[in-house]
Length: 235
Image 1 (cartoon, rainbow, N blue to C red):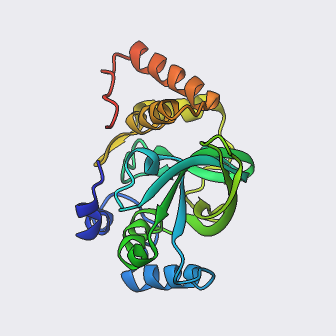
Image 2: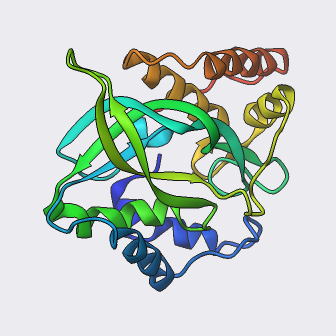
């Protein structure tokens, strides 16, 4: 599992430099910082920052935060639409990762990062999410829905899929998605672990994603039919 220390020590950058993985351009530290600074121009420096998580950030944020809430954004939906040949896949059997693609809505987790911690925490997030620029960092509107007074509007940082990127998978059919996830594995573990962990942690929060649940069933069936040992769910 990717850890905070690994991000601080540049583990992903070293993995990216290993021959035989991704062939895309990896952003330098200077490019990552420039991207982050551009995004933060629209954020008041004295204000805390909200960040929206919809995949592994739900169960493995690896950054420090002062509050965690759940709610929903509109205009984007969660979908397996990003090829990976490095983290949870390999060139021979690439995996698929989640992205926020255009249309619909998405329920997930909002993290509040203290204003005084933004300069310490956001570089870690950028190293994780923006290394290949396959996502676009944007300000998105959503609502907090986990309290009785519910539907509190919120502005948060989110990472949406870059449809112009070569790793964008486009519109794959359900069977192709299930097959890729069932078979892919890389230095960070099996792709199916990522799917199962995301689904189970969403369920633990009372968030049902029936599309992910159906995908879990199909992936488990494929793995059972082919004699794959069932992976453990990431804690």
